Image (cartoon, rainbow, N blue to C red):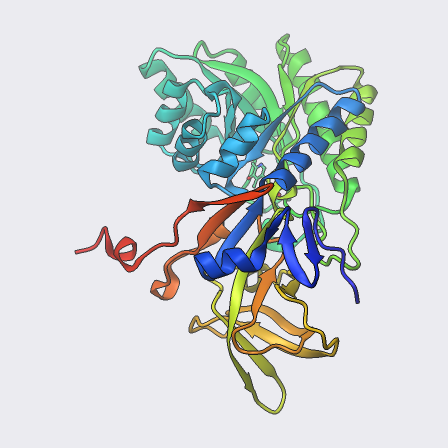
Length: 425
Ligand SMILES: *Cc1c(COP(=O)(O)O)cnc(C)c1O
């Protein structure tokens, strides 16, 4: 089945290119495994996302969810386009600031912020803490008082909706650790508006990732707007914004899947706001949607090995490089860097060298006849690829390359053995 390659990817004379760069050239010079991202693909996605809200008549600010792909150069690229940052740790906060995101364009989420991380956020003057529990709110208040500062806060609502995605990436259902119930959010809003150290600036929700259905998002947006309206009435205050989180899904199966669009999302949010007759500013926190399709993981076939049932293609990338197939049963298209002339397909399990049977990149996948030494591109690997990678099995983490039109450069060197042991002994 022919697949539609992601934007900026194409075969020219059977050789796979990103923008004007042949991927085989990068694989030869840098080695594999190696992540490659297209700068123009990321920027175009960002512009499409922002335009969608503009067209829907909404004033929106886009905060890139840094955890999707945390490389400084990727954050910098988006910051130059005007994006803020949604961070979930002190480390991500420092990355965002180092990449040039101004503190007032950073929001800080997460259920387990430490005192040290909160102090860092307070001293930096971030836009808001997205508060996920009552004890967190009290800690933020105490630290703000100690530092004689005001903490800008937003309450993260758990709206109790099922977003119909993988269980590990739902975040807005009862029983998830994320967010605050509607009733408790009203209580905490009252508390915050009476505190001299807390400024309640918004309400937020983020119900999950890789969302395809708009209905649950619509339900969540409605609950959020209802919460905002009630908070404003009960406390005689005005919120600066509603933060609708991220979560928009992408089509990993490039032949068949239809992804939800930011245009549909923005329209839905506009419809919701119209129902409440209030034009709150919108904050959105997309991660995956901006970077997933812009990135690929290059790998080389090391060995082929068959038993009676399965043909294994053992490649030099593994679950430590890209954990999504092992963790979420996620699907990634795999294509050769040089299209073979023979169009026959056979089924392979594409597996890595890690000592786990769960270490696979694809199972029972129809691919062209593979040979040892052939190089492959694992597509749509830009989000939650490198950022979830590890050193398991003492494997150095892969190099990262950024393609900018006619040029490419390293944005992260491949780790060495020395990097692996630096902090030991
Ligand atoms: C992970 C996360 C996002 C981004 O999710 P995507 O599915 O990558 O768009 C946004 N907001 C919060 C709070 C998150 O934890």
